[in-house]
Length: 422
Image (cartoon, one colour):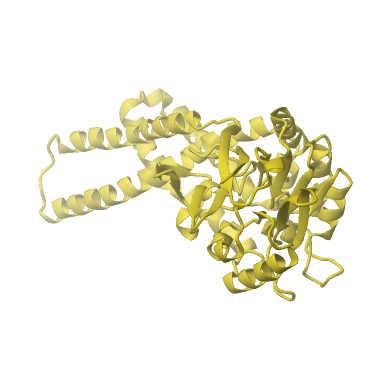
């Protein structure tokens, strides 16, 4: 992992080389000679400053000390310009690299042909200087696009979800859905408290959390627990664990790599019940709803907490379904949305999931309501509402960050549902 971080840091800095060369050429053409040295020094310092947040992100020990003391809004203000520079450097490198190769080829051919000098060098200098102006222009455009994506939490409109067999007593039951809080370097107690305040204003009957509550270390559990302390709903708060929860809290009494037990105990202290392949019931008598909670599937002995395992997931879902009382409508909480491929045979009316961050936190466009982003191709259900064979799935974009604290065209989300009789 250290090699990957070092390689990424070197790649970031190397991407800045060609844009810096272009800017230096522009300075030689457009800036008076007496000011060129100070202008070039300012350009070098600006590029180093823009790279710094992303470099620190890949040096985890430095990241912990630098970023954990900063408010979330400050982090976003730091990372937005840094990400804008990364995109600018990448685009300019792709454009300038072939241009410089062509220029060098033409220049070499001219020398071989022993052409006499005229005013051509002056034209080449102006052309090179113009190419240097591409860098600030591209950066300004990129920064403007990113600034427009500086979104606040999106509390979705309430979606009516038809559910077969729903008792009249539970018709109209409201649910607030949170997922992927990723409490850690970029999300801490104050951010969680703000989300909890928004959820409490909704007065939902049931609040559910579908995993990745912790980002990297169980040491961040106190921030999660303190942030969730005020969360309230009439039917309680239910949760399941995601892969990041298991990597952050990997060791448990059920097996060396079963994990998550410290998180479960912490959540219990603030009234959050974690369903680890378990079933909870809402309502009384025959007027009940079964809430199934599927744990992230990771076989004992395996340290790969990121791989989705369809066969093992179907097996666990089958066992969980058998535990639920027959003839009662069912709601499934799960972290990975592709679990929905196995859902229809088990008569689960609604499945709530997260994990995808809306297709990767950077979304290019939506097609028929489905996001197309950086990593959307990795998922069958990257985000939004899906309905198949009488069953519904909603994939929430999440609240926290996977990696750098930047979301583009993919605002953090609290989703809302109302169950209705079909």
